[in-house]
Image 1 (cartoon, helix red, strand yellow):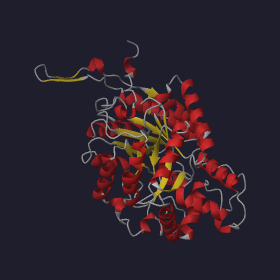
Image 2 (cartoon, rainbow, N blue to C red):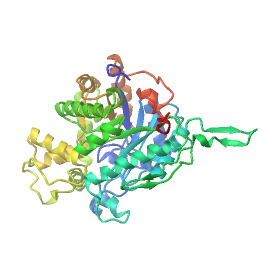
Image 3 (cartoon, rainbow, N blue to C red):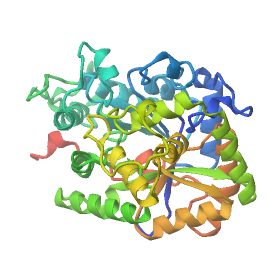
Length: 447
């Protein structure tokens, strides 16, 4: 996809919706997080609108620290992403399938095999959202009390991704000849042992599945700290970020592309796709009423718990004067450092009190949120795209299915009218639809 072409669009299928109180909305099926037919319906909505992919977030723990919060959230009843997308691969035809999986508490052989399998099941539509774990509760599910240090997690992730790519290159594309007459199933001259010995990992290989249809599933990345930017510039083909400020969005975009060029990569092979939370109404008032209704469903324990978590678990907002101003700085977190920075930047520019920041986090988690008519939402997206702050967007509907349906029926036609979004699929694989090159088999670079 050339930079002056149309924007890419994905949709995050976060259980019953992105808003903290989505499950309480009367239009939302409360058991949607574990209903395959519900997910298939959402994927079909997005596919009919020619979205590039559906995106499943994940973490390996219950994130809330206390039962008061756990009791009131819906996030802890949802499918494991690769399992769900494997099922959806047989109920969709064209749309990409992005699964989140951490490098901190998986082994590379497992993930290389699972994503290769998903790529075959979907005929070339798989993608891996590469993350490092960010919660001590994840660590405690895997025999540790605390997470490794932030930079150490990224160092392991860098080695992990190199190992996974090496495993995907175990077999050359034409290694499996399946010759019944000779009795030779695989040409072993086209088999390459990895034999990796590194600082964090030791993996012999080879992988026991053929090289994926896309070469590698598309590599997605979602970190915006200094370590995250370096990692995304080196490995990311789609970079998911939270950038509510146009100025900061342009700076992030330019910085990432510059870093990617330093790794010898072309700008059009690293797509920046910030999140957007669209609250769509046929009138501005209708959109505002939707948001206010969701806010009225949000219990204070849930809102405060979410704010503490997204600020990096370095605060205890239950002890704060919520009408005091948010400070410019907080202690450095071992959680998602870039998100803490984004949220504090918003609070400083808007001169927010704690109460105002808590509400913003509950509504959007720090992503760009637009509450308005289809025309207003389309204008914001096009302006962000044209100002080189985005190559596309990961759409984060506040509730499912209604907000996705409204976006598809009301906003997508506006984007097409402006010539900024496609009307159908142009390729067979996710790589082809995103304009990304198929990676060369690294085991053959000596030839």
